[in-house]
Image (cartoon, rainbow, N blue to C red):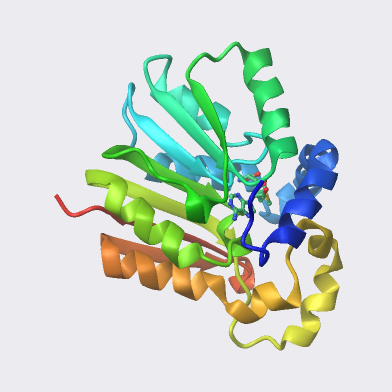
Length: 224
Ligand SMILES: C[S@@+](CC[C@H](N)C(=O)[O-])C[C@H]1O[C@@H](n2cnc3c(N)ncnc32)[C@H](O)[C@@H]1O
């Protein structure tokens, strides 16, 4: 995989951890009773895309395909999911999952999201917990917005860092470091670039921060 060098550590992290990624995510389900419900947030993100059966959606940084089931429930066999990810190992896990499910409408693309050429007039673009890791996240959003069909939506569910909290507290989140979230990542403040680029290119943009500002949900629509 040809990376920009700035995301080589991210690629290494996911190449190494693809086998345990789903278990890592499942671990957080023990906090569900405290309202930390990743599955529910994924479902909300997919709902916000306002997809219809037969649509085509691009899932940026799709990883092992944890959004696919929710997308399939809406798209049906006539629709199409294009999963884009930097890591071939994460995509291999996604490919196994797609095979197990017997889905014939999933295309997996191994690419840096910043180098990816979106199909023209795509019906929806989704990214969950991935764009924070992409140094050129603004470019990804701008390219996606250009490709989006008029009236269709781009939705991001991702991590952030609360504005009022010192970055010294990042050590409390040591478990995210092996998954590519470093001091450099947080200092870049990608959540700001992402939302600014959405505001510059889309209409009806909205952003909701939750979990004390550690997570956010952003959505916008391409002008008709
Ligand atoms: C935390 S995982 C999220 C996976 C999935 N979206 C989910 O919600 O479970 C982050 C994913 O983003 C991918 N990723 C990181 N940087 C990327 C880039 N520049 N281009 C494409 N994918 C990238 C990683 O390989 C990894 O699979």
